[in-house]
Length: 151
Length: 151
Image (cartoon, rainbow over all chains, first blue to last red; front, side):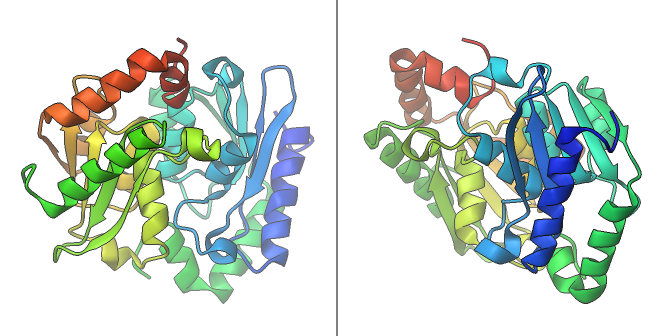
């Protein structure tokens, strides 16, 4: 797993698009065991006034209704360490692996993912970090709201 | 906390509506510390072809964008024990309490909620149980898909 993966590139492209839209710049992609991108999306808190469309939730939603078997062996790529909600979505659908762009900004449910048998890989990608850091500096209130924290 | 709570009644009414729509009959409501219903919703997997709009996620979504403070002291009512995704949403937003209609059909993240400091109350309500049991008998494939399990 590396920043050259098509899934990571899709997630990063989603984060860039979120940034261009003025939204929380976090992107994600869901890739099947055989390498097909099943869905990709980005955080829509600002764009849709959404309290639940984090990047990973957007991605599962875009992938649509799938049988449990579709998630077996699948990988979730996300540009930032997943919050507890998105962690729970990965656990519920029993994906195999979560590949994280960076976790310097925020560490979500990585240990919980591991405890539930899901592989966690952190790529430490600079662009993922730069995108979210710029957003936090510009719109700290929106950022803290997005992770359920007081500013 | 009892089946007489306005929040529980709202959640149950949502589950009934979901049943009438032919959907997964699980309902939920989010009630603030001072007793105001901030949002309520039901599972929309079938109605919207959604992979993420479980009852609790629908409810957080209907409540809309709120500051972290709005969730402090809040209670999530749900007619069925919450799956890992919905558990994670409650953890992320740091609600105070989750009140569950029944958990004979399915036990979700109750222990994890407790481990993260969230109070869990199970009401063992017969109508909640009957609604979901009827659905599972009629549409087992939709049910197992909804919780990410093989049939």
